[in-house]
Length: 131
Image (cartoon, rainbow, N blue to C red; front, top):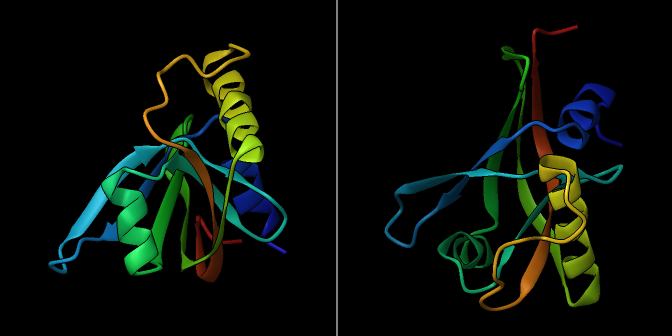
């Protein structure tokens, strides 16, 4: 089970920075909407995007979630992609995230390819301040 402080940050209306590895070994970082189930950080993206391709080629990622009200309170989760979910569940999830972040019931942006939920299994978790 994820630390309750990580769950609170990931399930709240806080943005996350997602770091993935590019094919040349450089790091790509994106500002993302974030969520969590009890054991994984959840990122929702489209399968044609470089960040998704990066995660499929190299499953190592880092997600940093600062508290929107106090960015010096944050969680850093280093882990690996455990699995992905596409189809109706991924579409429903992006709509739920749109409600969380924008207050709308349907994700307003065009979907170019297919939505995917990326489940990230934590290997190292840091919460600041500790305790």
